[in-house]
Image (cartoon, rainbow, N blue to C red; front, side, top):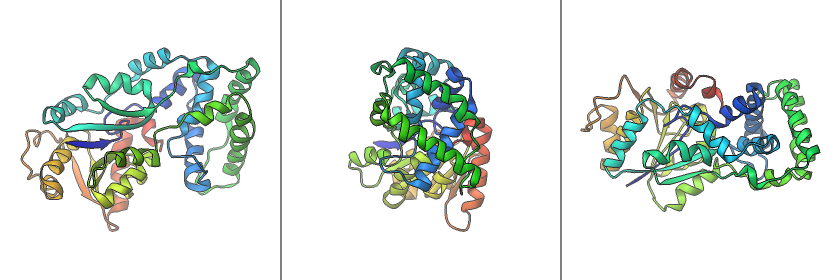
Length: 325
């Protein structure tokens, strides 16, 4: 039996791309601005060929310019890895029940190698990126690295756009798509494709399961959640507004046992099993491990309340990383 899940958020607290920006560039505003620009490209411009989560595509030329290797990315992953409470134990529980996760993550592959494979997870889809495969001229490296502080200093990009936000978007559009795209670094932008948005949905659909259970928490999960909402069970785990609005069921919890409980119930008894779970009536060895978990069926009457509760738990567990879409 299979279930499909995002990784960062539902099972680990770490936002690895954010940690890369902090560790190597010492600049959280730089990554925040890239993340906000990512939202703009997806929600407002709807740029052709661009998917939610392609922030990792935008970040990649900077990693190459700084000379960061795959080994260094793996070392950082080991250092910053923090599992969502009970993730290791609840994942072992599911695997013992012969319930196998298909992990679909926007994170760079190095992070999944360190965080998912050691738990015995075999089916892993992550953003493929080997920075040592690229070579940039010295002047390009300097041009790219000089942009870090400039990007960090740009006004925040609010949606809907105001005049200050528009100025940031104009600068970033020119930098990435007029200048960088025409340099050697343009190959990096062309070749790095984060596993997010419709690309996540493509993975789910490739398994040919007509009524899957899918777990997500952010904008990069919206496509696979929306599809599962109509065809199976879409579950938001401490999700933001993009995850909650595209799900049938929202989990607000500090423990991953809540996810395992719902997955086991759905794969055992379908939607009726989930209804029992919401009422705490599904018989499971982990039914007593839910630690104040709240389950919500999503409808128009409660969606705003659920979003607020879900985002509050998200922020409590993940801090600033939880505020990123």
